[in-house]
Length: 331
Image 1: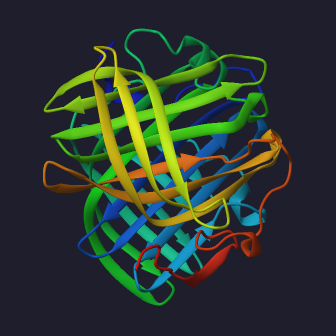
Image 2 (image 1 turned 90 degrees about the vertical axis):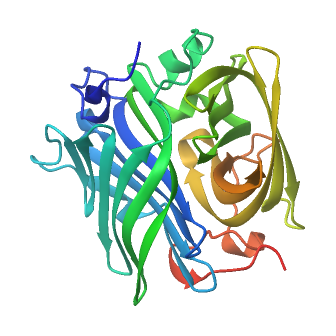
């Protein structure tokens, strides 16, 4: 089934208490050294909304909101609209033709961004149905992935910046229960260099279930499903902060697409319902002489334990909430 503009608008919830709808995107303006990750989610039947925000300026400051009271909000009567979701000061609005507007207004960080150009048709994780188990457990009603360009303004601390950079976004709606996920080897590897190459992929285990892999690679308007994914990660001395990674995406044709990524900035999100924490790292890679970007999302939890690392446990990635100085991952 091809993309329909209704995918970008709020849907009618089922009666399941775990039904959710979320918009998530990550971006990077290499010229201005600004990037980030932003998620706006709602659980209408629980009358709650969730936000995750990470924005940084290389050589400047970074801001993280990924846990605590400020990340969870009670939904009001106007927080679900025909083309818009609102959680606290965070909004996402479908503008039509695949364009989206994202805004937020935290005390130490503000933003107003527009996803204005798509590099390929927005699509689901899989066209051939090999991720049905995943979809029924995590994204039962629908899912959208798309790479493109984003522009607008962000304010970090006291400094405001105009940006125009690369972006990858996803939307999901339906049943989701994070406690069913086993994050002991979870990986998501998704990004773009432009119309020449965009990709979205993940590896996830459900508890007492099989390993699930899904995704696609889009090149010049043509796309193929991902059948297997390996993400070989090079960690710093803390055993938690990835300095780089090699992603190997095996397509349905048997072709392997190999991507060498270098981390720029990252942050951590506690996932207490899964007894773990995940982390995201905005990273760069080279493809045919052009610099692209991706988000490496992962959980390093081989013992399937319940300890969530603190800022003192890591070298570079951000754990403590709020404003702090950016760091250099490489010399």
